[in-house]
Length: 226
Image (cartoon, rainbow, N blue to C red):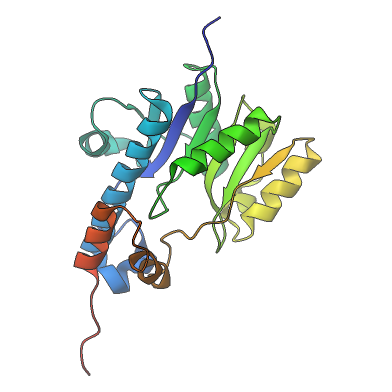
């Protein structure tokens, strides 16, 4: 049997104007939101490469966005469309594809944080190594930025669709996982780039990657005098 190694799966939506980060459009404009999405995807894939080497996978939405994503992520990542009806089905399908190619732990991330750190991966993999079945990284205002699993877990992805879309997805996922007899590890809650206030907070952080900061600084629309 081949040695287990970590794989990373990035769930990425194509950076198309008017289709990503709509809540930030009053601050950044549609073009700025698309540029931000591109920068976050590049950052997430760079982080994934540090964590997993050449075992990086990117599942993209919509299905016809392969060429756009390939231009962003480069030739090294395995690229395939998201498949399924709803978040849970797409996660289940994408994770199954990766486990079909790899036999080690899998870290799934969404490119939502202004900065993914090595410590995110280290903490998640340590929890898996300490016999957690699943590790969850919660976003402060609801949702997840990371899921880590050491093996296929159909019970986890069988959560109802409303649970994944709920602002309280963290507590729902935790409760459902416990009901299924799974040991849960929790990472520190992080602030994602969901709202204009998140952008302001990110720009106040001197440690965010310069490409992300540059997009944010260049795209912010200052209020016009009335």
